[in-house]
Image (tube, rainbow, N blue to C red; front, side, top):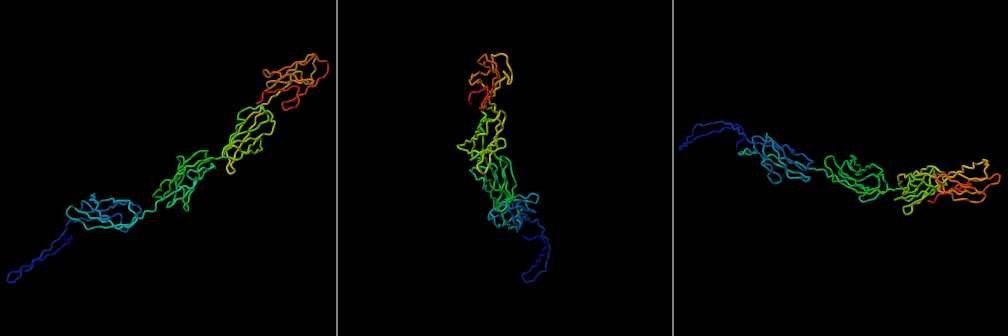
Length: 381
């Protein structure tokens, strides 16, 4: 077909004798509505990082466009408002490609439009968790997750529903401290890297925290003991030694079969005390265990006859009080009398008599053997 434009045509006739006519001339213009097409994206000579390519363009005096890519025709794509688009099969591998397009009005077809473009998708990001390794057990409850990443600029770590990051990748490595210290137990941490456009697949590590622990079993916190000679006992896991602290002084103990014990200096006076313990595996310490207990050993007092007093009745009954005790033994002139039952904290014992006039010495002995005239006792615990 003639391109749009002006044209001139001439004609001459000839008879049998060889005579010619004058020349007839006519000038005319072709102004047909010829379909046109152009590819706007991907532009010729361009590079795209997206492997999923959609070809877009414009067309005039046309109703549809056919796109040809790698020997296959796609379309017809409808021209709407002078625009059209056609998705190519993908994702495309990295490389250089050529796509062509022609438009039509149903009768006439445009010339071919062409675009040569390059797909250059960056390498896919990858990520790996190095520590704590999947399936590993750590004794330190303060955990830092470390790992590697390739083709990535940052990493996001997810732990117990919370995201940490973005963490910068430096020299292919990254690290993120988890909140802690973590209680003993099993945990899962995940990581995803990105290059700002594409994310890696998720890396995961499930690990167990088994740090040192310590428990004081006796004296139990809140308990009362009647024996002033106190030995602290307890248990410990993932530990080799325990340090007991009492009244500002440390006492070491070895863990054997998960058990340990430390004798406190004594005998302890009646009162309330606090003892603490910390275990260690040589590298990591446990949290502190604590027990507050009360020492309430037997006590005894002679009420009558009062020390230093004078009595006019030669028949003397000794009376007194006792705490934390069930019986009392009275000693008079080398003879023990008792055991005397303590009732409501009181007791009494008649001395042999009548006593002759004179002075009698009373001596007080406590359960720790300080020589009393009266001695109290409780059943052993």
